[in-house]
Image 1 (cartoon, rainbow, N blue to C red):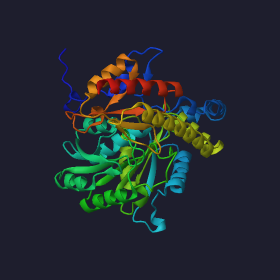
Image 2: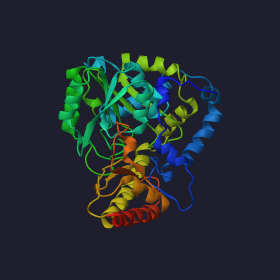
Image 3: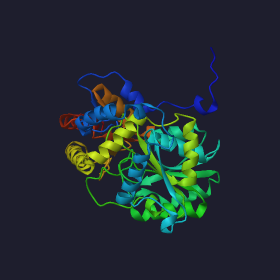
Image 4: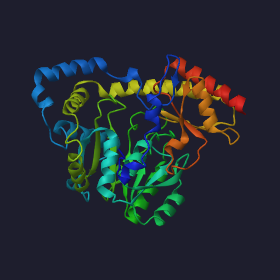
Length: 402
Protein backbone atom coordinates (compact mmCIF):
# COMPACT_ATOMS: atom_id res chain seq x y z
CA UNK A 1 0.00 0.00 0.00
CA UNK A 2 1.29 3.46 -0.91
CA UNK A 3 0.24 5.44 2.16
CA UNK A 4 -0.44 9.10 1.49
CA UNK A 5 0.32 10.74 4.80
CA UNK A 6 -0.76 14.30 5.54
CA UNK A 7 1.68 17.09 4.82
CA UNK A 8 1.82 17.84 8.56
CA UNK A 9 3.06 14.34 9.40
CA UNK A 10 4.89 13.08 6.31
CA UNK A 11 8.18 14.81 7.11
CA UNK A 12 7.90 14.67 10.89
CA UNK A 13 10.78 12.75 12.45
CA UNK A 14 10.48 10.67 15.63
CA UNK A 15 12.04 12.02 18.78
CA UNK A 16 15.70 11.05 18.79
CA UNK A 17 15.51 10.68 22.56
CA UNK A 18 12.60 8.22 22.36
CA UNK A 19 14.53 6.27 19.72
CA UNK A 20 17.65 6.15 21.90
CA UNK A 21 15.59 4.87 24.82
CA UNK A 22 14.09 2.13 22.61
CA UNK A 23 17.51 0.93 21.44
CA UNK A 24 18.78 -2.33 22.96
CA UNK A 25 20.85 -1.92 26.09
CA UNK A 26 22.83 -4.12 28.42
CA UNK A 27 23.22 -4.03 32.21
CA UNK A 28 26.49 -2.17 31.56
CA UNK A 29 24.84 0.61 29.54
CA UNK A 30 25.17 4.08 31.07
CA UNK A 31 22.53 6.44 29.75
CA UNK A 32 22.82 10.19 30.06
CA UNK A 33 20.22 10.47 27.29
CA UNK A 34 16.93 10.42 29.18
CA UNK A 35 15.07 13.31 30.74
CA UNK A 36 13.46 11.12 33.36
CA UNK A 37 13.11 12.02 37.04
CA UNK A 38 15.30 10.13 39.49
CA UNK A 39 13.60 6.81 40.37
CA UNK A 40 14.11 7.49 44.06
CA UNK A 41 12.09 10.72 43.75
CA UNK A 42 8.74 8.95 43.35
CA UNK A 43 6.65 8.96 46.58
CA UNK A 44 5.61 5.35 46.02
CA UNK A 45 4.39 4.47 49.51
CA UNK A 46 2.15 7.53 49.83
CA UNK A 47 0.79 7.04 46.33
CA UNK A 48 -0.02 3.39 47.04
CA UNK A 49 -1.89 4.34 50.21
CA UNK A 50 -3.81 7.17 48.54
CA UNK A 51 -4.67 4.99 45.53
CA UNK A 52 -6.21 2.39 47.81
CA UNK A 53 -8.20 5.11 49.59
CA UNK A 54 -9.50 6.46 46.28
CA UNK A 55 -10.77 3.01 45.28
CA UNK A 56 -12.34 2.62 48.72
CA UNK A 57 -13.92 6.07 49.02
CA UNK A 58 -14.63 7.45 45.54
CA UNK A 59 -14.01 4.77 42.94
CA UNK A 60 -16.90 5.66 40.66
CA UNK A 61 -16.05 9.38 40.27
CA UNK A 62 -12.40 8.48 39.73
CA UNK A 63 -13.22 5.93 37.01
CA UNK A 64 -15.99 7.90 35.31
CA UNK A 65 -15.79 10.61 32.63
CA UNK A 66 -14.82 14.04 33.90
CA UNK A 67 -14.96 17.62 32.64
CA UNK A 68 -12.33 18.68 30.12
CA UNK A 69 -11.12 21.62 32.22
CA UNK A 70 -9.97 19.20 34.91
CA UNK A 71 -10.79 18.10 38.46
CA UNK A 72 -12.04 21.27 40.15
CA UNK A 73 -10.31 20.83 43.55
CA UNK A 74 -6.99 20.24 41.75
CA UNK A 75 -7.44 23.28 39.53
CA UNK A 76 -8.20 25.46 42.54
CA UNK A 77 -5.22 24.11 44.48
CA UNK A 78 -2.88 24.73 41.54
CA UNK A 79 -4.16 28.28 41.12
CA UNK A 80 -3.55 29.08 44.78
CA UNK A 81 -0.15 27.41 44.91
CA UNK A 82 1.21 28.96 41.70
CA UNK A 83 0.12 32.38 42.92
CA UNK A 84 1.88 31.77 46.22
CA UNK A 85 5.20 30.45 44.92
CA UNK A 86 5.46 32.11 41.49
CA UNK A 87 3.17 35.13 41.72
CA UNK A 88 0.99 33.81 38.90
CA UNK A 89 -2.70 34.49 38.41
CA UNK A 90 -4.46 37.61 37.17
CA UNK A 91 -7.91 38.61 38.34
CA UNK A 92 -10.12 41.53 37.33
CA UNK A 93 -11.27 41.60 40.94
CA UNK A 94 -7.73 42.63 41.87
CA UNK A 95 -7.57 45.37 39.26
CA UNK A 96 -6.00 43.29 36.50
CA UNK A 97 -7.13 43.73 32.90
CA UNK A 98 -8.17 40.11 32.54
CA UNK A 99 -8.83 36.89 34.47
CA UNK A 100 -6.54 33.85 34.32
CA UNK A 101 -7.92 30.33 34.28
CA UNK A 102 -6.27 27.00 35.08
CA UNK A 103 -6.88 23.84 33.07
CA UNK A 104 -5.48 20.34 33.51
CA UNK A 105 -3.68 18.79 30.53
CA UNK A 106 -2.12 15.41 29.79
CA UNK A 107 1.41 16.40 30.66
CA UNK A 108 3.12 19.67 29.78
CA UNK A 109 3.54 18.36 26.25
CA UNK A 110 -0.18 18.65 25.60
CA UNK A 111 -0.22 22.21 26.90
CA UNK A 112 2.45 23.15 24.36
CA UNK A 113 0.58 21.45 21.53
CA UNK A 114 -2.75 23.06 22.44
CA UNK A 115 -1.22 26.54 22.54
CA UNK A 116 0.07 26.06 19.02
CA UNK A 117 -3.26 24.70 17.76
CA UNK A 118 -5.15 27.62 19.24
CA UNK A 119 -2.94 30.37 17.78
CA UNK A 120 -1.15 29.04 14.70
CA UNK A 121 -2.62 28.59 11.26
CA UNK A 122 -0.81 26.49 8.66
CA UNK A 123 2.40 28.33 7.78
CA UNK A 124 2.44 30.62 10.83
CA UNK A 125 5.64 30.78 12.86
CA UNK A 126 6.73 30.08 16.42
CA UNK A 127 9.89 31.85 17.58
CA UNK A 128 11.99 29.63 19.87
CA UNK A 129 15.26 29.53 21.69
CA UNK A 130 17.80 27.66 19.60
CA UNK A 131 18.39 24.91 20.69
CA UNK A 132 15.16 23.96 22.44
CA UNK A 133 12.97 21.09 23.66
CA UNK A 134 12.44 18.52 20.88
CA UNK A 135 8.91 17.75 22.07
CA UNK A 136 7.90 21.38 21.51
CA UNK A 137 9.56 21.47 18.08
CA UNK A 138 7.62 18.39 16.99
CA UNK A 139 4.38 19.80 18.40
CA UNK A 140 4.81 22.99 16.39
CA UNK A 141 5.83 21.21 13.20
CA UNK A 142 2.99 18.69 13.43
CA UNK A 143 0.53 21.58 13.47
CA UNK A 144 2.02 23.06 10.31
CA UNK A 145 3.88 25.87 12.07
CA UNK A 146 7.31 27.07 11.03
CA UNK A 147 10.01 27.17 13.70
CA UNK A 148 12.27 30.23 13.83
CA UNK A 149 15.29 29.95 16.10
CA UNK A 150 16.98 32.65 18.18
CA UNK A 151 20.53 31.95 19.44
CA UNK A 152 20.70 31.10 23.13
CA UNK A 153 23.32 32.79 25.31
CA UNK A 154 24.43 32.06 28.87
CA UNK A 155 21.64 34.25 30.27
CA UNK A 156 18.89 33.52 27.75
CA UNK A 157 17.94 34.45 24.21
CA UNK A 158 19.97 37.04 22.31
CA UNK A 159 17.50 39.91 22.62
CA UNK A 160 18.75 41.84 19.59
CA UNK A 161 18.38 38.72 17.45
CA UNK A 162 14.95 38.08 18.93
CA UNK A 163 13.70 41.47 17.81
CA UNK A 164 15.24 41.01 14.36
CA UNK A 165 13.53 37.63 13.99
CA UNK A 166 10.20 39.11 15.08
CA UNK A 167 10.56 41.96 12.57
CA UNK A 168 11.49 39.59 9.73
CA UNK A 169 8.73 37.08 10.55
CA UNK A 170 5.39 38.82 10.05
CA UNK A 171 3.49 35.55 10.43
CA UNK A 172 4.93 34.83 13.92
CA UNK A 173 2.24 34.13 16.52
CA UNK A 174 4.11 32.74 19.55
CA UNK A 175 7.39 33.13 21.38
CA UNK A 176 8.21 29.81 23.04
CA UNK A 177 10.67 29.91 25.93
CA UNK A 178 11.94 27.68 28.74
CA UNK A 179 13.48 30.42 30.90
CA UNK A 180 14.19 28.38 34.02
CA UNK A 181 16.66 25.47 33.83
CA UNK A 182 16.39 25.21 30.08
CA UNK A 183 16.05 21.90 28.25
CA UNK A 184 18.53 21.02 26.77
CA UNK A 185 21.01 23.66 27.93
CA UNK A 186 20.36 23.92 31.67
CA UNK A 187 20.76 27.72 31.64
CA UNK A 188 18.43 30.23 33.29
CA UNK A 189 17.21 33.40 31.58
CA UNK A 190 18.08 36.53 33.55
CA UNK A 191 15.40 38.79 34.99
CA UNK A 192 16.44 41.59 32.66
CA UNK A 193 15.97 39.41 29.59
CA UNK A 194 12.62 38.11 30.82
CA UNK A 195 11.39 41.69 31.02
CA UNK A 196 12.70 42.42 27.52
CA UNK A 197 11.08 39.29 26.08
CA UNK A 198 7.76 40.36 27.58
CA UNK A 199 8.13 43.92 26.32
CA UNK A 200 8.94 42.74 22.77
CA UNK A 201 5.97 40.39 22.72
CA UNK A 202 3.70 43.25 23.84
CA UNK A 203 5.24 45.67 21.34
CA UNK A 204 4.75 43.36 18.35
CA UNK A 205 1.49 41.70 19.40
CA UNK A 206 2.78 38.16 20.03
CA UNK A 207 1.78 35.62 22.66
CA UNK A 208 4.43 34.11 24.95
CA UNK A 209 4.33 30.40 25.76
CA UNK A 210 6.34 30.02 28.97
CA UNK A 211 7.25 26.39 29.63
CA UNK A 212 8.26 25.80 33.24
CA UNK A 213 8.48 22.06 34.02
CA UNK A 214 11.61 22.42 36.17
CA UNK A 215 10.86 25.60 38.13
CA UNK A 216 10.62 23.90 41.52
CA UNK A 217 13.87 21.98 41.04
CA UNK A 218 16.22 24.81 42.01
CA UNK A 219 19.17 23.64 44.09
CA UNK A 220 21.46 26.69 43.78
CA UNK A 221 21.18 30.43 43.17
CA UNK A 222 18.24 32.75 43.66
CA UNK A 223 14.70 32.50 42.32
CA UNK A 224 13.86 34.72 39.35
CA UNK A 225 10.26 35.85 38.72
CA UNK A 226 8.43 33.98 36.00
CA UNK A 227 7.45 35.87 32.86
CA UNK A 228 3.85 35.00 33.64
CA UNK A 229 4.10 36.88 36.92
CA UNK A 230 4.76 40.04 34.85
CA UNK A 231 1.69 39.54 32.69
CA UNK A 232 -0.63 42.56 32.91
CA UNK A 233 -1.81 42.35 29.32
CA UNK A 234 -3.03 38.78 28.90
CA UNK A 235 -0.21 37.72 26.57
CA UNK A 236 1.42 34.85 28.49
CA UNK A 237 0.39 31.19 28.47
CA UNK A 238 2.09 29.37 31.34
CA UNK A 239 2.62 25.63 31.08
CA UNK A 240 3.90 23.25 33.76
CA UNK A 241 3.62 19.66 34.95
CA UNK A 242 3.75 17.28 37.90
CA UNK A 243 6.09 14.98 35.96
CA UNK A 244 9.20 16.22 37.73
CA UNK A 245 7.87 16.48 41.29
CA UNK A 246 5.44 13.54 41.53
CA UNK A 247 5.46 11.13 38.60
CA UNK A 248 6.23 11.45 34.90
CA UNK A 249 4.08 8.44 34.01
CA UNK A 250 0.87 9.96 35.38
CA UNK A 251 0.88 12.54 32.55
CA UNK A 252 -0.76 15.28 34.58
CA UNK A 253 0.16 18.86 33.76
CA UNK A 254 -1.52 22.24 33.77
CA UNK A 255 -1.86 25.49 31.87
CA UNK A 256 -2.59 28.92 33.32
CA UNK A 257 -3.76 31.37 30.67
CA UNK A 258 -6.14 34.27 30.14
CA UNK A 259 -9.63 32.83 30.46
CA UNK A 260 -10.52 33.50 26.82
CA UNK A 261 -7.40 31.61 25.70
CA UNK A 262 -7.97 28.81 28.21
CA UNK A 263 -11.52 28.27 26.96
CA UNK A 264 -10.25 27.78 23.41
CA UNK A 265 -7.63 25.33 24.65
CA UNK A 266 -10.37 23.37 26.43
CA UNK A 267 -12.39 23.10 23.21
CA UNK A 268 -9.29 21.96 21.35
CA UNK A 269 -8.50 19.39 24.05
CA UNK A 270 -11.96 17.91 23.70
CA UNK A 271 -11.07 16.81 20.17
CA UNK A 272 -8.03 14.84 21.32
CA UNK A 273 -8.50 13.12 24.69
CA UNK A 274 -11.74 14.55 26.19
CA UNK A 275 -10.04 14.94 29.57
CA UNK A 276 -6.86 14.02 31.42
CA UNK A 277 -6.80 10.79 33.45
CA UNK A 278 -9.19 11.57 36.29
CA UNK A 279 -7.88 8.96 38.73
CA UNK A 280 -4.41 10.50 38.61
CA UNK A 281 -5.82 14.01 38.89
CA UNK A 282 -7.49 12.99 42.16
CA UNK A 283 -4.31 11.23 43.26
CA UNK A 284 -2.28 14.38 42.60
CA UNK A 285 -4.72 16.52 44.54
CA UNK A 286 -4.85 14.20 47.53
CA UNK A 287 -1.08 13.81 47.66
CA UNK A 288 -0.50 17.55 47.54
CA UNK A 289 -3.12 18.34 50.17
CA UNK A 290 -2.59 15.40 52.52
CA UNK A 291 1.19 14.89 52.38
CA UNK A 292 4.23 17.10 52.91
CA UNK A 293 4.61 18.37 49.33
CA UNK A 294 7.15 21.06 50.21
CA UNK A 295 9.25 18.54 52.12
CA UNK A 296 9.07 16.13 49.20
CA UNK A 297 10.26 18.83 46.79
CA UNK A 298 13.15 19.69 49.11
CA UNK A 299 14.08 16.00 49.07
CA UNK A 300 14.12 16.00 45.25
CA UNK A 301 16.20 19.18 45.24
CA UNK A 302 18.74 17.51 47.50
CA UNK A 303 18.96 14.51 45.14
CA UNK A 304 19.61 16.70 42.11
CA UNK A 305 21.97 19.01 43.95
CA UNK A 306 24.12 16.00 44.79
CA UNK A 307 23.93 14.44 41.33
CA UNK A 308 24.62 17.69 39.50
CA UNK A 309 27.59 18.48 41.74
CA UNK A 310 28.96 15.00 41.24
CA UNK A 311 28.67 15.24 37.46
CA UNK A 312 30.17 18.75 37.35
CA UNK A 313 33.06 17.76 39.61
CA UNK A 314 33.75 14.73 37.43
CA UNK A 315 33.51 16.80 34.24
CA UNK A 316 36.02 19.26 35.68
CA UNK A 317 38.38 16.44 36.55
CA UNK A 318 38.01 14.29 33.43
CA UNK A 319 37.15 16.57 30.50
CA UNK A 320 39.89 18.46 28.67
CA UNK A 321 39.67 22.26 28.89
CA UNK A 322 38.67 22.47 25.24
CA UNK A 323 35.21 21.11 26.07
CA UNK A 324 32.80 23.72 27.42
CA UNK A 325 29.76 22.91 29.55
CA UNK A 326 27.01 24.75 31.39
CA UNK A 327 26.61 24.85 35.17
CA UNK A 328 22.88 24.61 35.94
CA UNK A 329 21.32 25.91 39.15
CA UNK A 330 18.46 23.43 38.86
CA UNK A 331 16.65 21.11 36.51
CA UNK A 332 18.06 17.96 34.96
CA UNK A 333 20.55 18.84 32.23
CA UNK A 334 24.09 19.92 31.35
CA UNK A 335 24.99 21.06 27.82
CA UNK A 336 28.44 20.21 26.52
CA UNK A 337 30.14 21.66 23.45
CA UNK A 338 33.11 20.00 21.77
CA UNK A 339 35.87 21.94 20.00
CA UNK A 340 35.66 22.00 16.20
CA UNK A 341 38.55 19.54 16.02
CA UNK A 342 36.28 16.75 17.33
CA UNK A 343 33.45 15.45 15.16
CA UNK A 344 30.46 15.13 17.49
CA UNK A 345 28.94 12.24 15.51
CA UNK A 346 32.14 10.22 15.74
CA UNK A 347 32.37 11.07 19.42
CA UNK A 348 28.80 9.92 20.12
CA UNK A 349 29.30 6.75 18.06
CA UNK A 350 32.46 5.94 20.03
CA UNK A 351 30.56 6.58 23.27
CA UNK A 352 27.85 4.10 22.23
CA UNK A 353 30.54 1.52 21.49
CA UNK A 354 31.69 2.03 25.09
CA UNK A 355 28.10 1.64 26.38
CA UNK A 356 27.56 5.34 27.14
CA UNK A 357 24.66 7.24 25.59
CA UNK A 358 24.17 10.99 25.19
CA UNK A 359 21.82 13.03 23.00
CA UNK A 360 23.37 14.87 20.01
CA UNK A 361 22.83 18.61 20.02
CA UNK A 362 21.37 18.65 16.50
CA UNK A 363 18.31 16.88 17.93
CA UNK A 364 17.28 20.16 19.58
CA UNK A 365 18.02 22.50 16.67
CA UNK A 366 15.26 24.63 15.18
CA UNK A 367 16.78 24.06 11.73
CA UNK A 368 16.59 20.35 10.93
CA UNK A 369 19.65 20.69 8.68
CA UNK A 370 21.74 22.56 11.24
CA UNK A 371 25.06 21.21 12.43
CA UNK A 372 25.81 21.14 16.15
CA UNK A 373 28.98 20.16 17.95
CA UNK A 374 27.18 19.88 21.27
CA UNK A 375 25.46 17.13 23.23
CA UNK A 376 23.15 16.94 26.24
CA UNK A 377 23.86 15.14 29.50
CA UNK A 378 21.19 14.15 32.02
CA UNK A 379 22.23 13.68 35.66
CA UNK A 380 18.90 12.79 37.30
CA UNK A 381 18.52 9.20 36.11
CA UNK A 382 21.96 7.52 36.37
CA UNK A 383 23.37 6.34 39.68
CA UNK A 384 26.38 7.99 41.30
CA UNK A 385 28.61 5.17 40.10
CA UNK A 386 27.27 5.49 36.55
CA UNK A 387 27.83 9.25 36.56
CA UNK A 388 31.48 8.89 37.51
CA UNK A 389 32.21 5.96 35.22
CA UNK A 390 30.32 7.41 32.25
CA UNK A 391 32.00 10.81 32.45
CA UNK A 392 35.40 9.13 32.82
CA UNK A 393 34.73 7.20 29.60
CA UNK A 394 33.57 10.31 27.74
CA UNK A 395 36.57 12.26 29.00
CA UNK A 396 39.00 9.60 27.85
CA UNK A 397 37.37 9.45 24.40
CA UNK A 398 37.63 13.22 24.07
CA UNK A 399 41.32 13.20 25.02
CA UNK A 400 42.02 10.51 22.46
CA UNK A 401 40.18 12.42 19.73
CA UNK A 402 42.06 15.63 20.55
